[in-house]
Image (cartoon, rainbow, N blue to C red; front, top):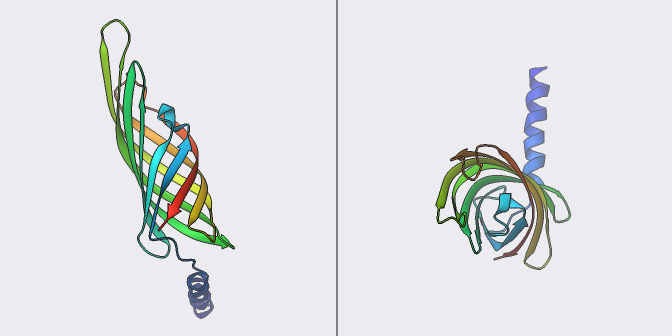
Length: 163
């Protein structure tokens, strides 16, 4: 029984490695979603191996009475589905700062950190273009001013140039 179990495990890993699709070494683009009020993000992905990558996202917002930034970093695992389609999952976190003026001459600043997960699907075109749709739950820890001590759900569409 143990021989069959070990053989099955070895065959499973061998089959997974044979069907592994190489991910791009670098990808740069935009990640557009609600992002808890921070709007779009500049997104960079660095391939670490055939099935692992690092994603860094920088989002910012500014306006008449407010400005802020948010930096996220995630380690992602990528698995091929079929013909250019991949799915991925990751874990990471980040930090951010948000400041605003309430028109009474009072400035408020909120600095926060957050833990994040990530799950999504992507399509790798024959040209150096990658498009993705992902879901990133974030658990924030910070001041109460901007209300980041909660769980936020970020859904975004990404488009990246691969090089």
